[in-house]
View (tube, rainbow, N blue to C red):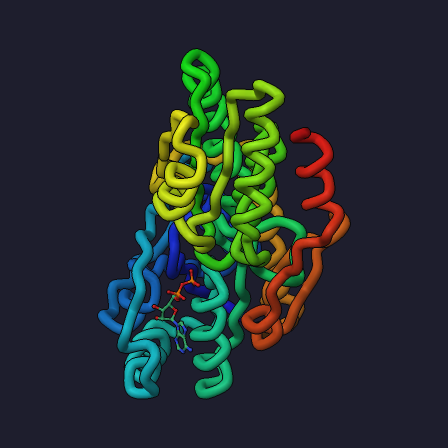
Length: 321
Ligand code: ADP
């Protein structure tokens, strides 16, 4: 592999820039030519591909977002789209790809590599952490820390007024942000899409706390569960005495400077992606498991989802009482 392309695709996540920087600089160190593909698979199809130099990635390790931009690309779902994309890569002589994105992006990469025999390496970039084969994904730590900071602030005002707050965090199919930020902020309840919420139990728990004059309650809800507004409606109806408010954190969780942890794993994964291309370890997703690099075939990285163990939920229950 002598010429490689790097792209960010799908949902954005803080730390993607640190990963781009690592790929570009490790590639150049190894004598490769490195190209940046703009706007995910869209830039591959539109031939929006730019040469990258060591200086192109200066002063970006600390920045959120992605200098290569990201997009969702409909045409890439079709064979014709992927054929056009591959044609553009071929014209430039690109013979290896590093895709920073989520499971959807890996699905696309897997198809491209199967149809056109181009080696692809995936780096897990998603705030949701819902990818198997890695203990960390690029962006999760930053997103969860942003959520913690926001929830701490809400708790201050909730405490001042003895209010009940329902706080919605991101995670359409995965409750990791809710689970981690909820435990770290001492939330009374955490509602995640992996578990069916027992509303009766939730209401009874709150009523019991009210009897004990525990007036400040923070409930963290993952957006994929039933949504904060829905939960608030039920609680307002069942416990009219509670001063119930809703706060949806939204997109602030995607932005901001990546944490040290995210910069570090992005750097290690980016380095390892180029090493893998050199060593011929093709069509894998790079993960970190037990602090060691871990390689999962792209087609498996797309299917598996992590499970949330019962222990975590037990911790929530015991510590929030
Ligand atoms: P993420 O990578 O964050 O999971 P998406 O699921 O939106 O985000 O996927 C990003 C892009 O990857 C899609 O817009 C599409 O271009 C490509 N992609 C996703 N799934 C497939 C698929 N089954 N076949 C081909 N391309 C796909």
